[in-house]
Image (cartoon, rainbow, N blue to C red; front, top):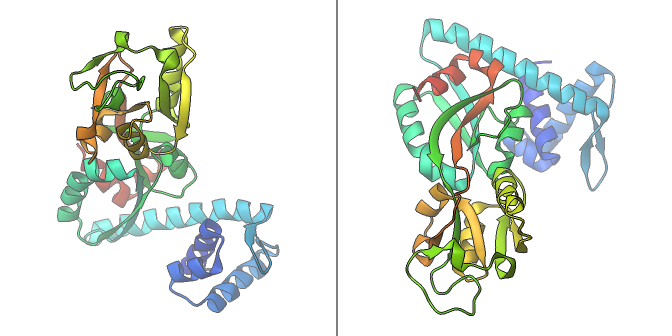
Length: 297
């Protein structure tokens, strides 16, 4: 089987939808179905369970997906190594980041990269920043922008690009306990009765762990009003007066609602975020990935 067939298999494995996978592969659904059938014939096992309503990977399909990603990765490395010796680099880089990261960091990075490597296509996917590392480790993305965890997973490379404080925020219109008068000046944490303050927190991830630890060390059982996926949604809910939230400062600086909220002064402050690029260490052997990586030096 050739690399085109492997790419079609990966597209179907990622989307689990023949229509979307065939569109991504630039073939008709019937042609994609024939290609998958040929692959299954070659390997001698069923890779997908299909019915009229759904498509799912079998256990054998999950194993083959790892092989397919690894094989295409090795092929890209060899091809680009040869091309780097002969001419300019060609190919593509898949990236993942949050919406905030896309306009906070990505413009400058891509502008520099595009100038030197115009023939490399960037495929950008956005979503929850807490998924950044998992998408790189799974092979779904070549590079991701995210916050460095307390413990780095084995085989993962990290390059820092910024440090952002993690801050408590409240609506400007009123104190977070709602029954207090309007305030515009910075609010001291000592004026907040935390046990009576509704909190809007990330539903998971590094920020949530740090907030939970901050309250636990102070013997406070916080009143969690909402658990939210996505920092931008936290800023929005806080601006509407639903409670106090926690977001990285960089999110607030780039938010269209920044003038609707204010930062709460707390002691001690929450530990800052270290934001940077992630990729698999083995992918730094690819001339394209290395070229992108080295652009940040």
